[in-house]
Amino acid sequence: MKNRSLAGALRPGLRGLLVGLLMLAFAAPFYLMLRNALMDARGLTSPQWTWWPGTMHWENFTALFSDPSLHLGQALGNSLLIAGITAPLSTLLASAAGYALARIPVPGRGLLLALVVGTLMIPGSATFVPTFVVVGSMGGVNTLWGIIAPGLFNPFAVLLFRNFYLQFPAEIEEAGRLDGLGWLGLYRRIALPSSGAMLASLGALAFIDSWNSFLWPLVIGQDPSTWTAQIALSTFLTSQTINLPGLFAGAVVTVAPLVAMFLIAQRYIVEGVATSGLKG
Image (tube, rainbow, N blue to C red; front, side, top):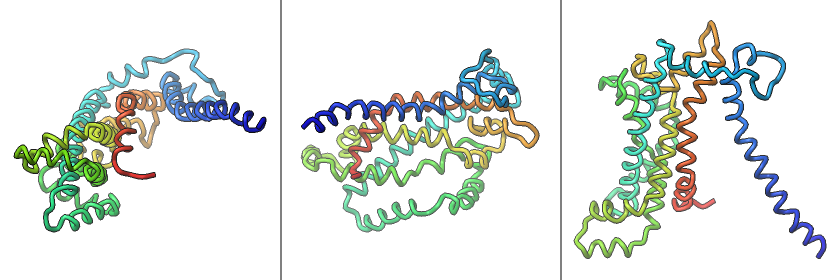
């Protein structure tokens, strides 16, 4: 009995210690980014470790937007526009496709589902060149729509929405049918408004994925006017020099919207995954 009571008393403390260690592990990269962004090049390359710079170089941040060759302000705007269009459109398309696969009894629905699952098994490297050829033949090189279009189809989100709508109460839809609603009306007036958590969670994840995309915007957006934030940051790494303070300052600036997005949508992300029908 004493051993059990002792174990019960120690369990909350161990749990708190574990949570604290995990918090430190997750916060460490952000601390390092901010620390390095406020240091000069000599301090970054010094063999002596300092926990915080003695003199904080805020000019590293102002230099990001005063450099005419970097185009960071325009690149941030492009990233915000691309992610702001890709996230809601891809989520709505996935929601509509998931509802159709879950509810509408059309011939070949199983084959369509198999094709959607099959796209998850094809590596992106296998479709990269064909996608570039198609988008390039349509005049999408050096355009923002050329960057946006391939990211509008998200098969993983389609499957999550399908699982969600399979669990949706059919009785509610039957009541809508009595009111004369068709499939489109049932989806638009009943199913879609009831999937707010899924829309918010997958929309946030799509925003983060689009914001962090690098290879496709690099290949399509060859002109500086179509650069995204990630492409602009890559200009700090050249074969001649590496601007470490500027690189870390740019990383802080570009990661800030993602941190804000996650803090706002973390509750919806957890709730959306919990209601998606996936079992751990």
